[in-house]
Image (cartoon, rainbow, N blue to C red; front, side, top):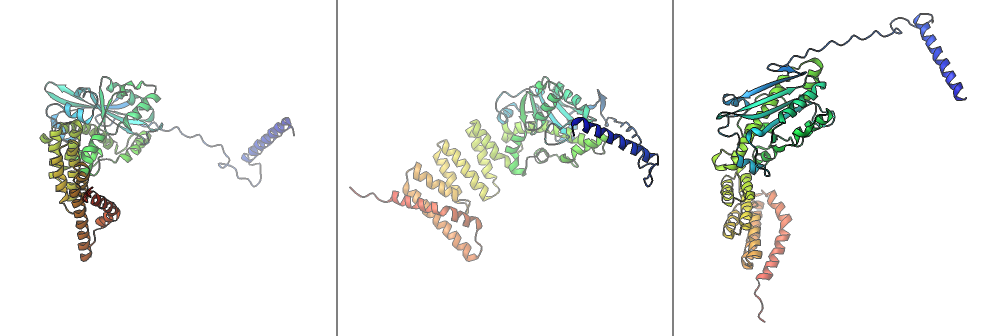
Length: 445
């Protein structure tokens, strides 16, 4: 069948189907139900317009909801701690925590946090809430001004991004928490999508996540902003919305006009930004003057490393001594003394390094084993005192064997000591043999 014949056949079939459907609707076909089943569907009613009222304290401007908070000294406790005294942050400490360019003026730092419709950061991620905070000097006092921009629906996102970019104009740096990986890239991609110039996002990045990890994660167990806020600044937010629930709040609010937990999302965003401002001040003051600021015990080691890299040897030594004095266990003390001894050895302060190794050697097994080995290595390779290195290795083997024998007699073997013995004893035996050869008297020629 050629193409013309096929098209004619399809046309006739379509016409016959329409005639059959019309007869069925008219009730002319026996045994076929008529009425609603075959009737044309009724037109759907137009959806009722959703009323979108600004949340309490917000005003409406160009389709979005916005508010501005000015936090004076008496209002700071509810936002994360006591008001800062003097400058909002220490410039010397900022240079230590964020090496590179000179630290900007406090008024030139913008603190940002965004809430989005998802955490993936892909093309479909909408920035529905953004906050920008700035320090403002009013005479001799500092206040913190916080602006929040809320998009009631998906099409309003462009205006939120536009306001954020306008707020960042004139800033020299932007401070955030993991914003290098999320907030700034998301804002940049959404600005490009809405054909807005993202030049205001090409600022110096002060990401507080990284110094917070170095300073406090070991002692706090994690370095989430909420955990650091509670453990370091001493502020408990109380009930707070889980970040994983925030996208659903936006979806419901966009569909129905509001959500009962929308206020919690707004408070969460404002709290994050105010906490960033206080945390930057606390971290920079701690870095610059560690003995003049209250510090958690876990901070002494990272502060010692920080000033060691800076080249302030005297302060680094004081900090290492404080960290060792506050060690919570013999294992931690041994680790810290070994780390400190390595620093002293690099500085060619051999006597001080030997004192740290020897003190760590006298701690219980098995945590003291690395100190025995470090001392033996020093005497073998640096001091060329093979007899002393041999004495140390023999002493280590006797101490480990005695400890294992005692544990076997008591029926309580130490799993860690047994593991170390199984893995390291062959290398100790090889070192022993080598040192015995080196320490043996040389035959006379």
